[in-house]
Length: 367
Image (cartoon, rainbow, N blue to C red; front, side):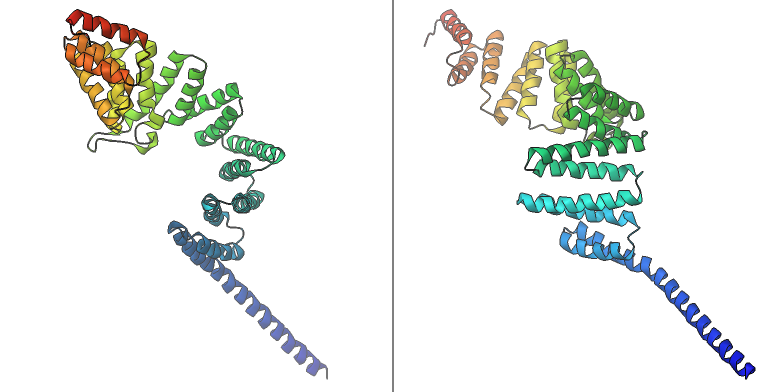
């Protein structure tokens, strides 16, 4: 009897052990399959995103997130889907719905990894987008303030990455905390002397304060990075400086050298460099003409002025510049022709009118 009971227990134990082993094997296989299935969905979602099929991408990535909710790097593409769909929406409420989804996903990611500066920087950008679509003053303030907290957390989490210092600095700049913004911009340039946006923002601040020499110094910082990134064989400029002319900094430098430094050689250099990137810019051609004019390179000035008005005939002031220039080199008829063109829209310019009458009187051909 006892032996029979023992045999039965032994058999039951074996069955339990087999069941446990089978469960463990099944779980093991499932754990092996999970990453593969998740990666497959992520790949499909990424491809759909790159093809602009954002709703399809969301569907794939939702499956991916359900399978492996701890793999936060999958979520970044999902956030991009939400942001892109928000940009495509014209209805503000629908824009906001997509942005809230993006915000909530970043919040989830930060709960898993609260020290990740990229997640803080990302959610800060979402808060600013929510700020733009907020419809009450209270909501706008809340989202703007939360963006500031997130940018600050990103900057503090990685103090050696100039990108996060730049983002927080620009937020403070936008908030009117200019002195604090300057510190962060300067830190950017110390960490990376090719960080052209930081130089540009510093120049903006100094221009607003009337500190033109400092503004020139900062813009020259961009020029240094620009020259280093010039690719001679291809006659092109590195992408790090946004195609070689970040926010049209070259023309700003040309104008500053012209008006503040009275350095026509430098002004000419930067206007010519501006035109390397865009030779159909009438303002740059006009500026180059003015610099040549001041430098007494009159034939070159005429060429630039004429090029400028060929691109934009409505620049009335260029006709006046040509009028005086032609008179100075003895081409009186050309001078009067350009005065007449200028007077079509500027007949109340008393000085120009008086000068024109003097020229007529001097040449004996009053009209």
